[in-house]
Image (tube, rainbow, N blue to C red; front, side):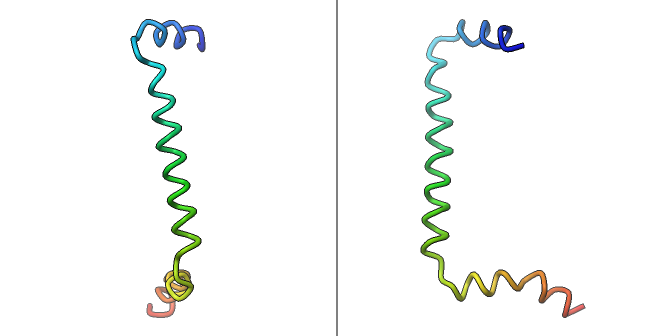
Length: 59
């Protein structure tokens, strides 16, 4: 199966840029997510963590 995909990909010009773009998007997303987690306010985290429990108590 890999030979089939590799054969088609080698015929496309400039295809080597797509893995680089994908890795860059993946890396930037998780760096931003990590930054958000570290800088999130603790009160907000506590409030959001109780949402599932608050919903059950109200019913």
